[in-house]
Amino acid sequence: MKPLRINLTILLSMLAVAFTTPLQAKPLKVFILCGQSNMEGHAQTKTFPAIAKDPKTADMYKEMVDADGKPVVCGDVWIAYSYGDFSGNPVGKRSGKLTAGFGSQHHIGTGKIGPEFTFGIYIHKILNEPVLLIKDAWGGKSLMVDFRPPSAGEIPDEKVREKAKGKTGRYYKLLIEHVKKVLADPKKVYPDYNAKEGFELAGFAWFQGFNDMVGPYPRVDAAKGKKSPKDFSEYSRLLSCFIRDVRKDLSVANLPFVIGVMGVGGETAGENTDAFRKSMAAPAETDEFKGNIANVFTAKYWPTELDAVLAKSKPLKSELSSKKKELKKQELNRDDLRKQEAKLTELMRRELEKVLTDDELFLLDNGISNQGFHYYGSAKCLGQIGKAFAETLIDLKKNGRKNP
Image (cartoon, rainbow, N blue to C red; front, top):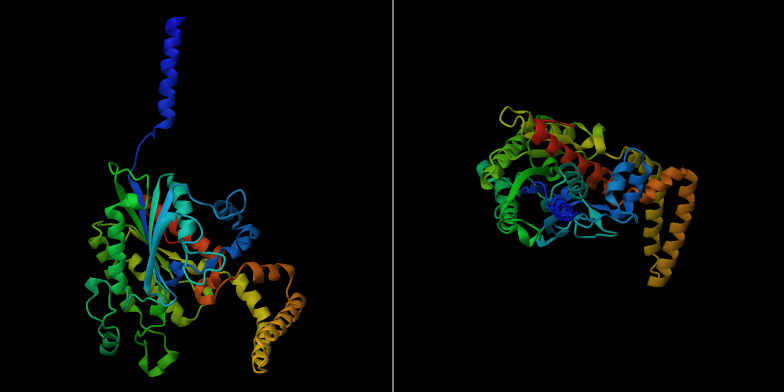
């Protein structure tokens, strides 16, 4: 029996080692997320209930919260975030385990998320490996000026060039500097980083565009003025230059890119918006980038149900706004003004309850936390976009191009 006891001890020891040692250590997967205000993210956590209520997104909600219904803290996904103030000035950096709160850092309300939250959740869910996100996002920044890549050359329009003096390419430089600084010592952000295994720069998500869409691009037909859509072909060229330069400066020749094609306004947006989207999507359709760049058409995630609710409630909200303005003209003291405004708000709420269904009231209360140009601050919308970015990048790495 003694030899059996020894063999059993050895066997148990071997099993213990097997279950406590990773089967195969792998490089830390690093993903970059970059853009302007909608990559920052203005979706407050108070809009999470709308995700749970919709059967189409209920499963996503379960991934986003813990057993107590609070935003999940990802144990094996960390993030390094370089962010801006209300005007987009680069004012700070923060890092930590991925959770809610790594969206916009101003007017935060209940805490904001951008695409990074579900991106990190689903990247880790798919890979089942340690993940580091590097996020660089500043509001109100264009590719023509602020993110202008080095190889793009000078801005051709003299007036635009003069106005942009001192700003051209600044945020491209900040992006590259931040990424390189984080990757020079990943352990500062990701405490369990294994230097022997190293890291793999595995993908880049670009979500930007609004400032270029409203920017100084020429009209297709100058004679028609504002009735003509703009010619955004230069944006396509700039985005191609941006991709090449990022790959060159970070020394990753075929770094997979996902382009979040701007979806503000949904799939029924106007002619000019449609023209911009086509130009934004164009680089991924070229032979040069075939198989390592993909588009995510974010308009498909636009919350059309919020459009309908806001349209029904708009007359009453406009009336409330007008009455509050009239109150301010009465030169009431602060306490009396607040009391009168509260009465007005209560009255309008009762009127809304007559006009809207229970489901519509729920969406009004739990689905919106910002303006339309910020996707209504809808966590349901930005959550689906982040998830799509993650799934598309992984599919791109495995199978080549995919445009959901």
